[in-house]
Image 1 (cartoon, rainbow, N blue to C red):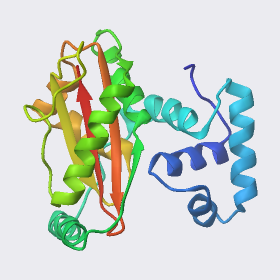
Image 2 (spheres, rainbow, N blue to C red):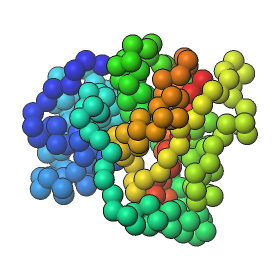
Image 3 (cartoon, rainbow, N blue to C red):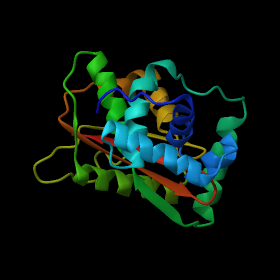
Length: 213
């Protein structure tokens, strides 16, 4: 994807969309209508040759990553997040999953900055990641599929980064992965392909799995 340059309003919309907000939530946050949000996005699609919202967010997020550090939290945030995850698991709340395509752009931006080859998206690894986030949602805590799930016949799963947050926030989790030496090493490892997925429960906790092979 090329460099995504839009108007200040379009940048505001993409920033909120990258945090996992819906068109309605973006409209409320910016004090505009849902129709206006979608009109801005449609103009971006036409201008930059994009086909959907996910592509626009991914392109914007990949170029904005260097300037966006992980969000600072108060001392009790992790405890509250862990408690919410446990509540969601014990209450057996429904789980919604979605492929985390933005992670591909963020990972490849990091690899390119380090002089490494870019990775391709593999839908089969995205399925493995979906299985992983469903499992974490049901358990209420972080776990890994490494050593427990068989990868596709022609792929050996090398590594997995996992994390959770209060809602889908690709940039936040990527920033946390990059800040952790082991997970950054996974991002920069000798891989060819990756897949990633989010799972969100009604308790408001979103789990992310990024699988490399």
